Length: 193
Image (cartoon, rainbow, N blue to C red; front, side, top):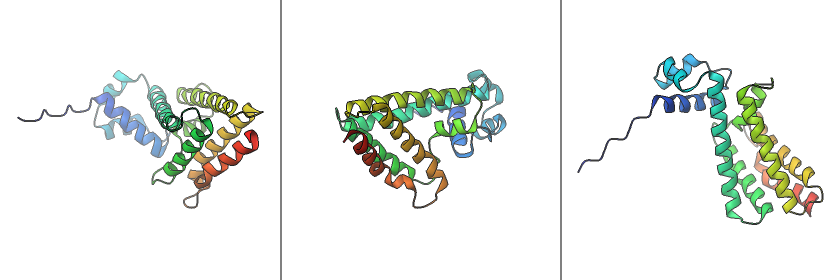
């Protein structure tokens, strides 16, 4: 019995995956619609049937990036149910490992905010919404840890994580993100004992 042939990817999927890869490697502004469709092997009308504009495509890519982040975050949380300290430290350990991989360019959401300083751009808006949710969750986890200043600890952890994303792009070797979990442990100890 022969195996059914796999369904070829739809044009919309090719466009999305190509844009996601190019936006991450080269930056959203640096990549034009012509390059996306050429590399995806589709036509411009195919792109515009699915996405009204490049900005809408960039926002969709940011939504998927946020989903991917939460997958990592939740996987770390599931390893340590009811222990927010261990959850954060596990997430930081795993982020440090990802940051050492070739081609790692930090967080695509952080990169989008840096690329689009003007408020209201759809990619920036998606990124800001995600980062606001992360801040809320980190503050809630800090409160669960018993921090006297849960907002302060949550914000300090956010700054540490964001610093890891940016510093991986600044240093080719001996990246500060290698010590991310140890730094988070010290922060947590300083705030929550």
